[in-house]
Length: 427
Image (tube, rainbow, N blue to C red; front, side, top):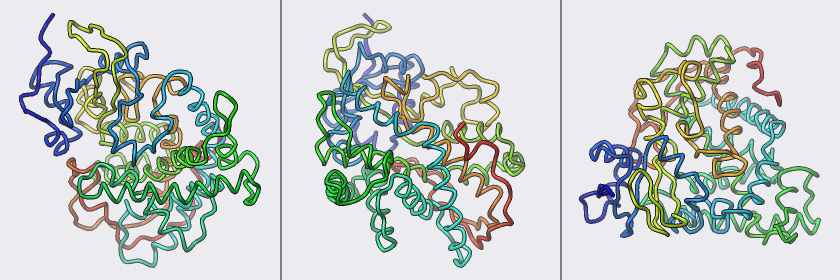
């Protein structure tokens, strides 16, 4: 059996944190292997990259997510007891809740709320000298997703709730800001847990069939209502990822500025091209760096042995840039989604495999719909200047964003045009 390459550092945690998106792929290239072993957080971990590795990683006979994610992520990004921590029948049952909540019809409703929030924000921005797009979009998406979910959000609380939701994904991976993320997780669950109790007791009305109503009354496989805190965690797993689309919106604005050849097709309202552009932003730019699992049993793959309980980390960013799957992967070219083969294992910005039964994110439809609405505003409905600023992507940051957070100046709403075909319709 060939020897699995091992990273030379005694512990590679600091190296991973200093370059979280490229740590795995660069070492795979160094060792000329799709897999290598490193010590991460003082624990031996197999790191994997590429479409074949992704196909292995999402084989439920080989790997489980239960107990795989480090405690800091479970305590901040996902929430303890969340769907991401489950596997098998229990995971499929809980996952069905999100599939039910994120049908095309419901996603179209959320897109409509996002469009209205953009209109309100644009009016406000027109009175400001400059706008930090990354931050401003977080606020408007908080408003949109709470309206969609039927979560009460008084105007005086918009800033507070935005900060709490943002901290769950924007601070979780930072050594310096991690404790703020933990504090925000506690505060956010304290915000929504009593709301779940009030909805169940009919002290607070929740429109029938609304996300708040469905989550509050969801039952486990034994027919019991979820613990109120767990229901709050899953409600946050609707709100938080929607607000996190602000990362991709900032990258979409960055791409329009850096690759102006794309802008004419976007401004023309070419629906197919807009779809390719959305997917290329998701492929080209960093979002999640990696995901983790544990080996269910001892097995061998490509001559490399895996131990039962072995922790494994799959490289998402590197797989999306693998030259075996993509022609010139470091080039931004939306047309590749017309010309090149896309599989559940080579295009994995939010996980791989099948969305209904595996751990691929069920919110991809939300990401695409909200990005379409946002691109329509940025390309066709707003006039603005992009002043000189630091537009380098900060790959050391989790999540990575433009160093300047994308500054816009002299924002002016343009005369209304028709919506992009299909942006706000269920089909």
